[in-house]
Length: 152
Image (cartoon, rainbow, N blue to C red; front, side):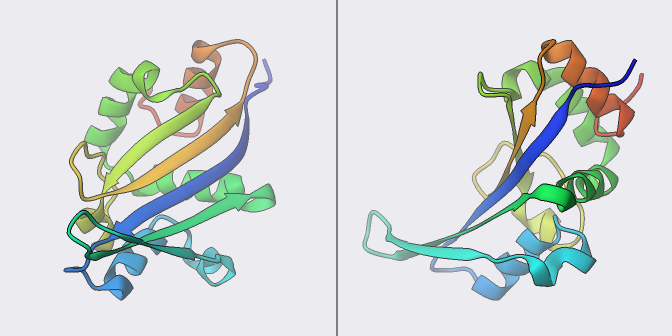
């Protein structure tokens, strides 16, 4: 049976706090995107003031169109097996009513080239927007077929 699941967009956001090196945080963000696509990515910077007046920079980008599957498969290859098992167990909690999958990766691990799901504060947020009709089980089968979820 052919899947009707489609990936529409993958968006990435990460904060740079006053105590962090913006170049290192940018490197961590780009570790989630295949090397051959990194030069094509446009990163938007938005500056905010923190509670105590300190500057906070929000870095964001999104992938749409023909490269979105390549990026999703790249993330799949870079994720560790434990994170995939956690994702499998928590998938229903990470999908919103608009069919967006919310993932949070450890910023420090990403800087080192490893993608680890993380529930703390120091994260890179990834939102993957899907289009599907048959429900969560259809999405689960698709994610297993590309290796984002374990088959067992």
